[in-house]
Length: 524
Image (cartoon, rainbow, N blue to C red; front, side, top):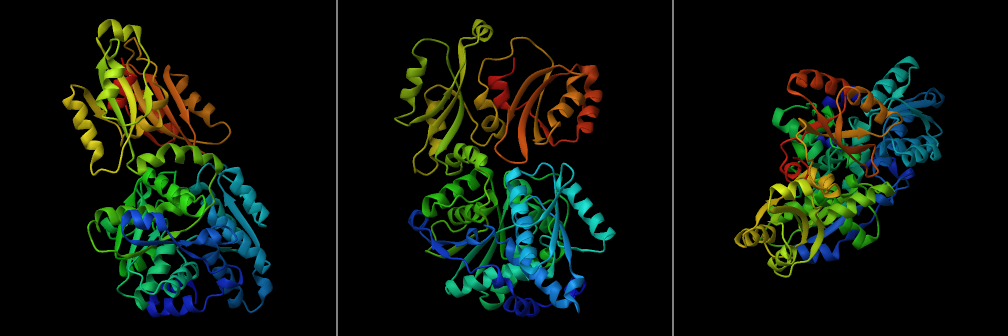
């Protein structure tokens, strides 16, 4: 049955297809691992389904293999299917490459030039024919469609395909066999193939089991579709959890999710980092951000929706472990924030001897994790106060961060809580060095900066030749995009021209000129 007939498929049809897949010719039944420490901490029986154990360290092999196997079965002459095409920047590419090699088919995979080298090399190692095209996934996707059409080849969609959905649904089949009294299942959401496949299977055999989709806050295409009652494009997507960085939920997947999914929850990058740490401490496996996404959702759901409830049996899908080593620096920096074990504050203290010692005493024995301050001659000559950037370790008391801020205010300090301020966490903490001493018509912008040869040159050619760059800070944490904070001196009569050039640049950006962290530490 071709995908054009999918609108006629019933839940029972999907159930039968999942039961008769051929995924185990290459995939394996993965373990269900109990999270002992987290279970004790949250008061529920918590486990993770270990898709990191697949040959490509991701669940994607299931759907890719099922699709190719069914294509071969539908051919009267197997030689007719000699090559397939896809676009991917990650796990779909690796799963398809291995599936194609297993079935004796050539796989041509279009990947953006921004794809980390480790992923490109993995696809090549698995037998994929890689074509690096464009600076974004959308551009690679366009080229893959054109190549498939020109050569009359099958284009293998990463999620919005009946055979791919049913292949991913085999995880639900295994899960019910491994945990018969399952009450909650948390599933990561990108394009929706995994959630749709698992939900359509589990809800028909265990209707009382709650299926919860989990999205990253900065790529919540399912939540957007639910609001609009149809798939819609996000304006932009975050890149930390690149395995779920999808702008638009699938049409087929959304239809199934509407019928069989009970709830959707979103989590922050910091909360994902905390769950990567949880998984490592229990299993010594380093999950990729998208792989730890569902556990982050489980933790948040149990602490908010199920707070003070009786114990429940809960499982999260560890969907993949293709982590870039360089990403670990960012994870390490942010996991305590995600665990609510650290507060980041801007505090005003007197510019005088002994003030730091007095401030430390006001913390009531709490440990300082970070302290940034740089004396500024210009600032000191005009003020008797100093701004400090401080990190403080928190205990396990309820609302301890709020109590800390309250205690400092009562002690006479002016405090700004920057714990949720992305500019402060990404850039300001590394840039404390005194304020700009001269008024300069400075405007501050935060960019997602693509990692490809010539990207910085393009940035400077578009903006640097016309306006003086007064501030520049670059951060990269191993993804296809780094983070840039840039300041420009823009006169009032140059505003329209400046924003026209900014649009021509084509990068994702956000103005931060009025951000309180910038004003406290870097502005005049």
